[in-house]
Length: 332
Length: 220
Image 1 (cartoon, each protein chain N blue to C red):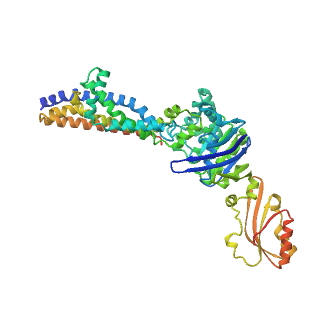
Image 2 (cartoon, rainbow over the protein chains, first blue to last red):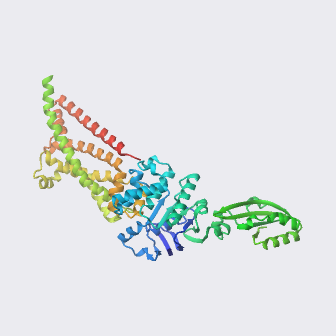
Image 3 (tube, rainbow over the protein chains, first blue to last red):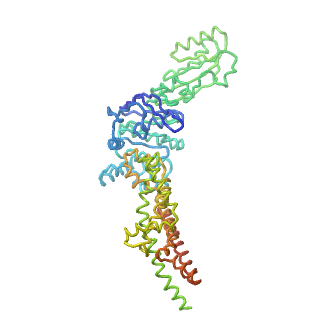
């Protein structure tokens, strides 16, 4: 378990001080894939780098399995880092070394014996599917292959925690999906805690169990991915998940009746709610916009409809919808 | 004609050896001294892996001061050091001392600029794996910038060949000295031309070899 308390990071330059993180509190459970989402400049990079102290926090505390990492001296810090893997957006492989030598690098600096190194690298190469590339240099690999090497390298010292810094942001969608499924597999197989920072919604939706949203250095919300996606509470999260507050611009001039937003989660997304509504209340339903997303095994539907008909019938219809266990928001 | 050729060769060959001797040893010594200084310039910089900004500023200033000395003056200023190190202030061996000292700050800057080409991301990744500063220097900074380092060393050798032409001022001999004494002072044009041709060949060979090696180790 990782406990982050009141984490604050201020960058001091001669001219000004920039606050990257303001009093962030977070708990990350063992074995989960935890996403940290935010726009660029939100403080994601600073946050993830505070966890292995590549950045020194200005204030606050971080405990990993009950150990306060702020109290570690240089040597202890290096030992701790060996148990925390990290992967990067631009892979950061050594261009002068082969795939094999790149994966050997963390093992060499940890003083692992040579025969053990060889055994472990072959294991790792098999796990990331690059057994045939072990003598290639990074420049001969594709982006996806480079990230696989990065993952193998990060796992070499058998860490208990993996930090992923925008690891798929430089990859195309198909390669991203492959890397994500590899991370998910590793998470399950090794029971490895993974912390992912990203600005890509799809990454969060695909593999994260829980997500925290950062905005201008502040934590705006934390929760299960399904909850956050279906009922985002902050402005920034709504923007992220594509649910806009108020009436979408293209519907604003809809003048024929009331406009409501219906949110379906799980089973209710499969009920023929709209057709029942139309039959029962003798109103016309006009679908103005909508989408259905699948997150893990949950289905989340988001529909904006215009209701036309007699005003009292429309009120009854809205009342009925609210009783169906759906989240209804009257927009107009 | 044949006699003339033999005369020129008799002058040229000892001078050539003197030049090679001076340049080779000066290169080795200036690398031994300059490499650690170049590394220090990079790692002690603000944001470096062994941040020591005050030390960095002083080191930078000292290197700049050494580089601003005209070589001819430096050769004389350094007499006491030459006497201490090789026991004499004149001759070919004694010339190696000022040549090495003159090339050291140059080497330090060349190494510095090569090491700075290494992407910070790679250094950060090494830090995240728990590498010590020393491990980062020997296993990341130097191997990753090797092509550029080789080109920098090539540049240094050619620079030292240029400086060695002034060695005659303290009796160091060498090709430059030969060209001045015979070609210039005695109007011996054939010797002058021969010397220049040999110098051109040496520089070409050094540069071509350096470029080839740099390319060969480049995996980027």
